[in-house]
Image (tube, rainbow, N blue to C red):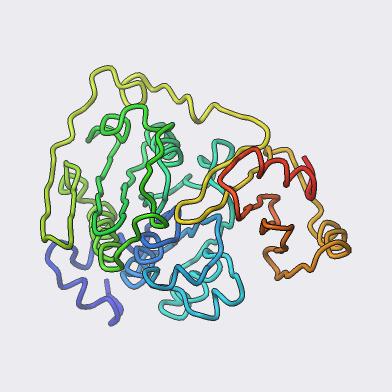
Amino acid sequence: MIIPERYARQALVSEIGEAGQQAIRQSRVVIIGLGALGSNIANILARAGVGSLCLVDRDFVDWTNLQRQGLYEEEDAANSLPKAVAAKNRLARINSEVDYEVIVDDVNSGNVEKIISGATVVLDGLDNFYTRALINEACVKMRIPWIYGGCIATYGSTATFVPGITPCFNCLFPGVSGHTSPFTCDTVGVLGPIAFMVAAWEASEALKILVGKKDQVSRGLTFIELWHNSVTIAPVERLQGCPVCEKQEFNLLNRSGDLMTTSLCGRKAVQVVPAGSTKINFELTLETLSKIFQVEHNAYLLRFRCGEYGIVLFRDGRAIVFGTEDPQVARSLYGRYIGG
């Protein structure tokens, strides 16, 4: 087995070796959320030589992202490129040997199992507990390891879950799917280095899994406070009678509905997701809206202003309504100008 020169220093690490590097090359990694954590995780793992990297994000690059999201450039923000597309463009210049899959979509009960199918590991770059709880159910059901991560202000946390070996996310945060935090990057900010640190920890845990060392992953919740220089690892115990990993009940996976709404972390905005059966004619919608509003568009999305609100519509029918945190307002604007 001959290891390419670009990975030689990594293969020299005794915990990886040539066999481990080959295993990394044969892996499929799914990163869900390409913000402060996910973009930096993707950068590390692409450089490490993963075979296939699936990049999943529902949002587009904004100027406020550039302070901490290491893959993006000013041109990406100026062009409102979807994060998954911008990430792939940059990563392909870093390592063209990796097979990149781009998914510009919201992760929900209707598509999560398809997205993570065949993954060696799933990594969390999300900003909400509902989707994390959903991913936990899918990963437990499909027996796929996944790694949680989050950061805000100067704090960060991460934990690794391996079905059949460790407790699950629900054991750590029971019933958290309905939880929202009053603290967001829009209200308390986020220090760039904490995002890089948590991303590096997540990527390191992923590499352990990729080389077959699942027994060496962290068994606790790692909590990092960067400004005052503290790292704490709290043990995670299996929840007796856990409905997910013990009883194999997957309530979130079995949900379905019509228009779903989600507030976006760090923005006064609400995402509206139509039911899976709903289809839009993007070109016709663009033509119609252009008769009423001044519409900007690219190959992936269109955007326009309606009074105090800004609306971004993606080709898959999702929309982000800026200027409100009220789901009813967002649904009303969606129904009035897009349909549903």
